[in-house]
Image (tube, rainbow, N blue to C red; front, top):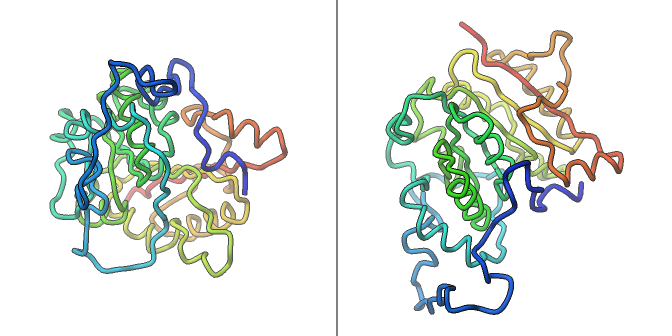
Length: 283
């Protein structure tokens, strides 16, 4: 597996890797928040993302993701506490979201599934302020980091989703409500017995097609070549999607997908990154 998959992304131009407040790397100063000693059973972030927002409301199934536990910095925790009520979205499956109400405008909406630490998401949001992004992940430090970046750069077109993107698509989004779908570097589940966990499967595309407007762009990228080939086969075979490349096959990396430092290091080592650009069929 490439060494840049789960590592923090490099800071894109104008978007520094800023995941905290002054003092979080060194000795605590008088301005730093004092850690709260939680009682047994008390939520880690009472006003932030829930550990399992959908709970037991929906059937158990094979999931394409597994939560990654890592340290939440002081700055990320502060961002979750302050900004989650405003820009966060727990995917509980209990309501259909009015996207215009969620963002306060009727701009096009793109769903991004899996954003890591959020630097690339922040850069894309800054470069295209007239497109709204619902960015979904289950990685708490990444959620806090993206909220920090959104506040620091005034990115009012980003909402951070916490939970299972399948439940979001199936239960909480209206038909034909999305203008695009982005899936960058999903877990490749390389072992054959785990291939059933891969996100890009016919059943997932069946669901996504119902939520994407005709003409909406599906953009996937992966550095795992066998998964790239499977993605290409599955998307090509699906009747609701068509390849944007006239001759079929993979697409050059479009300018709107930032090249991270870690991706660049992988390319320097000979790793192959494949982009796939498919469009929802116009009926």
